[in-house]
Amino acid sequence: MIRSTHVRSAFTLIELLVVIAIIAVLVGLLVPAVQKVREAANRMSCSNNMKQLGLAAHNYASGFGFLPPDITVEIGASPGAPGNPGFPYPGIAHSPQVNLLPYIEQENLFKLYNMQFPWWSSPLIVPGTPDNQSACQSVVKTFICPSSPGGAERKANGSFTFGAKFPFQNFAVTDYAVCSSINQGSVTFFGYPSGTKTETLYSAMQPWLKGAGVAALGTTASNPNPFGAIIDGTTNTILMCEDAGRPTGFTGGTADGTTRSDAGWGNHENSYGLDGAISKTNRGSPGNCVVNCHNDNETFAFHAGGANHVFADGSVRFVKESISPTTYAALITARGSGMTSAEVSPSTD
Amino acid sequence: MSSWTGLAALSGLTVLVLGCSGDGRAPALKAGGKVVYQGKPANGALVVFHPQGKDRENGPKPVATTADDGSFQLTTYNENDGAPAGDYLATIVWNQSGSKTPKFSISEGGSGGADKLGGKYGNPKGSTLKFAVTSQGPNDFAIDLK
Image (tube, rainbow over all chains, first blue to last red; front, side, top):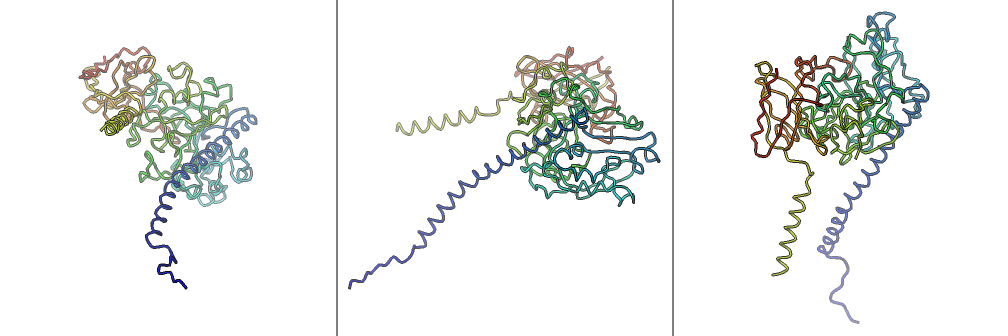
């Protein structure tokens, strides 16, 4: 009988370590690829949500004869007095998103929201008034972009001061908002003559401001746009943008330590005017960086190189960070035709 | 020997390619100046340089807000970095209050108040304020408004 002097009964430690190291390297190679695919899927899902919102806006328009308003504000002659809109609250205000609820399979949620009262209406503030705040606490998946950190777990808290202070908490968030105009301080920067009114530069979804008290806010009454009022063309006018990641404030790709209260889909402040920023590290305005610089009332998304936009024609297009600021402004305005050279034929490319 | 030369050439080429693969934007040159209105410095006025020329007119715009003494440093890509070389028409708007002061409190933004210059220098089309930023410099523009 021959006895082997050297039996290989197991792997040596070195062999094992080498195998583990090789596997680690392979996994390391795989992880970024998987993450890339995940982000691609998220981005697609995000743009699909925008498509739904665009279709919802079109369905709204076929029912009402005009596109859904951006923010809705109704203030009576003597705000807060009996008989005035929103009484006992000083007025009525709605977000852009609330109008779209019935058209994205959220009819039941819409029924919980009373359009005759502002979004901050709550029996906890004034007993006996509708609980619009609790409706605003319901998560609506279509309003959330899966690329945003935090997903549906994010909640917005804060208070809105309008005559009195109205606290709110646990509002379900949205990553989509409306860029409804060019802010007055930035009008000449984007190439329009100084003194061009905000109303002249309104976008496809424009504010619906009504009631005798609106003038006291230093603005003029306005109605939502029928399709015919978008004289720049529906293909050349943005309907909704991304303003993602809220309530966490982001500058460039990093959380900057601020918290935004305007993140709730029920909050009328899901609407902003364009200013731009100097760069991804400098929020100074006006500036040449109009996409992905910060999420404080500017277009901001977590997609590499740009942000999704749904246009008034219902198409969803990816607008690059490198877009020229005047072209972006031209895509926002619904009636800017001929006012700047960029307005002649704005392109997302 | 030849393989080393090849490697050196390759790495040199890589550096060259990487060096040129920037964002392709025109570099900003230091530029600034001072805005004077009827002999007094205009503080807090928004100065915008609108690039001229077919391929530049929709490009990045140098912008600045004047300091208390009316002086300004243009900003294009980074704070006070200046402006890319070329011809510009400038607009100047001097609001009574800061441009960021909200008046329309239910929303963002709002009016910054009336332009103290009456909109005279606020239209980029046909602006009489014509400036050229050059690589030679000094790109120091004294803007004397009447």
